Amino acid sequence: MLKAREIEPNLPDRIRVFILNKKNYDSVIKQLEAIAKLEKITQQSHSDRTTSEQQDLKDIQITNLSAKLEDSQQAIIDRIDALKTTIINSIDSKMPKPLPLLDAFNQILDKQVYARLLEKMSFLGKKKAEKIIEQLKEEKKQNNTHFSSF
Image 1 (cartoon, rainbow, N blue to C red):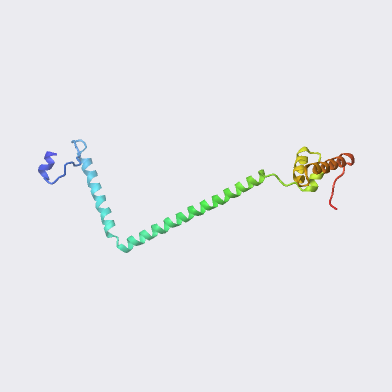
Image 2: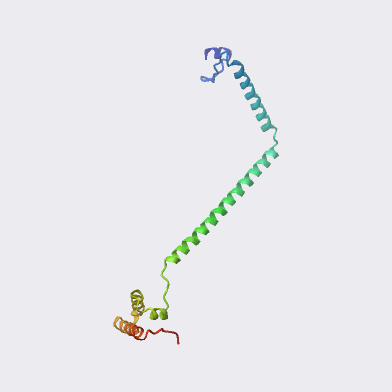
């Protein structure tokens, strides 16, 4: 540091230092020269560009970014739609299917159908609904009747 200050008194408190020995002196100097050349070329290429070229480059980058965002947005929308369809189908498959009244009468001997039919006919009153359902059960047992529409 003291030797560097002797050469250049305006140096800051900390500087980068390369320690060389005789074995690697030539290769380090060549690398530093190559890095210096690359830095000059890079600085020239940036300074050589006109403002219109820079603006064109920025416009292209913005257009590319916009296209990527639109593609990503469309992919997200498509995925959401697919998930909606999957969820709706899943819910529909788990929902109990309505049992038409005529089919319920034909399956009256099944305990679950009996309970659902009793629940549906509860507007008649519990005793009256039970009486009608029992009569339907008796008819079904005795004659093995298949109820049909008029």
